[in-house]
Length: 336
Image: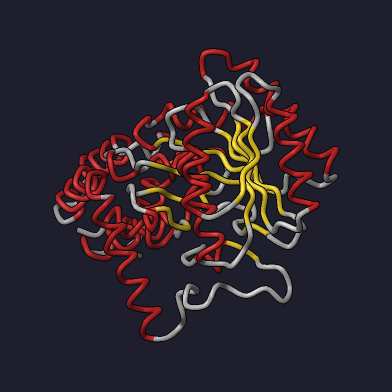
């Protein structure tokens, strides 16, 4: 699973990360990854406190039926999901009864491994940037942090990977969305294509891809509208935007990322289900993990829908948008 930006994105042949931004493999790279993990632990503290304390109290005591029930309750309360929880607890109980895992510390370590395994899906995790341009479409409901995520992603694509980026403001129903994205475009130092309020979103997406092709831009990221109160129209709109993009560039969009607000818990799972029925969703961006005790929803989506989590947002800072790493995420949830 991805840890550095170069682990998540496949760069075109001949391309190289921006100097000094590839994380490195030496001591500095190790220190950087250590800082990232510590920040991840800090920002997942609410979920860990709700989950980890119960798990430690449970697994270091006697092993009986009540132990497994308490563990199951703790995981469900953290929004890991009933189906995923049942699978994990059954596996852990079976191994404990067989004597394969003994003692609280070993059980905690094995639980961490099982949760990390849930987050690994059969879908490709990496995002290929070799198409010219690579078209990424961002979807999700209002309030999930989608537009902010796009801005941060653009910043990292340029600063970490040396890619040129063009943003397409195809959320033409909400004036604030275009203004917000424009602010991020300025901050990231990239160009943007926008339309007037109420304009057909497909026409904005079409123009963004056209400009991206003509100007030799590496990556075009298209924002889309998100409205729960009219889901049928929203999903039809998304499908239309995808068709319009494909007319401009046959295999595009190359990546569809769905932004999910972790604080919504199981509602986030339902959102992911609805969106994935309407359009092919290649990956999840899980935001606001620092403000919730429901961080397990990332595992529920991966485990129940088979959609990989590719990026996580654990704070307001630019560096708080990070490539998702299953092992680090599970350790940050469980390790006291």
